Length: 161
Ligand SMILES: Cc1cc2nc3c(=O)[nH]c(=O)nc-3n(C[C@H](O)[C@H](O)[C@H](O)COP(=O)(O)O)c2cc1C
Image 1 (spheres, rainbow, N blue to C red):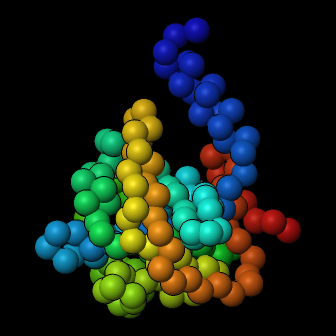
Image 2 (image 1 turned 180 degrees about the horizontal axis):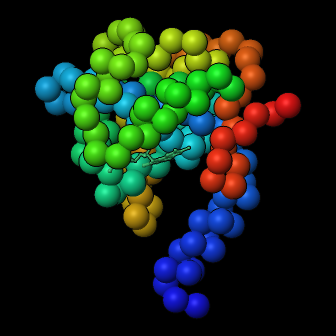
């Protein structure tokens, strides 16, 4: 199998695992809001409360996210596909926040309204993860409201029902 084919088939195999969709938000060193769509979110530990997500080393927002002291992971609802697409845009452009509805939250981290859960975190650990870095956050505060999730499966958005 060529490397390209192997990548494709491995990506397809990973895509068999249905996930929710989150947006990770933070501020860069100039205090500008940054955000990125991520489905690598995982709950890690209840006591102490820890969560993780993985950021691609090739992302235009890589340094900003690995340097950020605080970040929020927001779980998107079934009707927030537009927000997912907005924060998944290639080549980060800060005007994305002009198009997105947002407000300032805990530790000045930008927040997206209408999500089903938010985990307000302080960066606790960074681990080497191949072409990604695994970011583990201590959950400082959280909010949740039962709602239908946006689902990502086989490379596409889905809904539960
Ligand atoms: C559903 C979905 C899940 C994603 N999950 C991740 C993720 O967990 N980590 C990551 O670094 N990028 C993830 N991405 C890609 C980023 O959202 C974004 O598209 C990419 O970083 C854009 O490239 P750039 O950062 O170089 O501009 C995901 C994209 C989508 C649409």
